[in-house]
Image 1: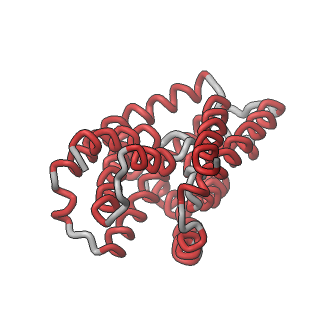
Image 2 (image 1 turned 60 degrees about the vertical axis):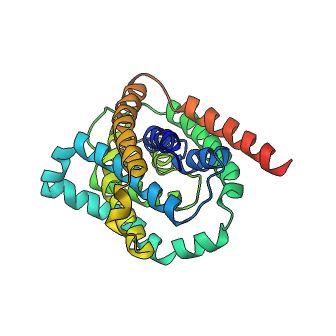
Length: 254
């Protein structure tokens, strides 16, 4: 992998990780464009750029992790994903052997659900933007489990759930970003443990560049998403998912 490819993938990861458009799908597309073989070094690199995105969210929401109550709420919301990751994820990996072929379907279905959710949300009186309850946070944590399926998107699964349940938009987005930190960090540690990746493997120039670009772009991406939520709906992301999914499907199946 060249320095330029590492930088581009870092930008793609940092920008898409916190948007409801599936970072997995976009990284797979970039890897296909560059004809990058999915070997152990690429897996290691993916972990490095994810760590960059995690750090960005952790810094922006650092105060949340100094409150015992907030930490307890995050751990409770994380429980469904941990259980599903241990019990279900191995079967998902076997079932979806060729990840790229399931991505078009999950992108389109996710986009359609988002459009439906927006339609329902508009019919209700929008709640005052306030803190989510413990029950609401747990529900969003359960919704995150669907992101184990490639192309679903962790953000999208929580956003769609929030729309159908009529949770406050900005509060849902903020919690999505905060919950990303323990979720992605634990998943990254699990990947490192399973693949036995040495720490020195993460210190090559390409990996460091991917980490840095993902970090800075993720900082922008999170702020960009919070700005959009205040002024607009999620409809553009829904249509983007649908168009992207159809485009990938036409390329793969025709």
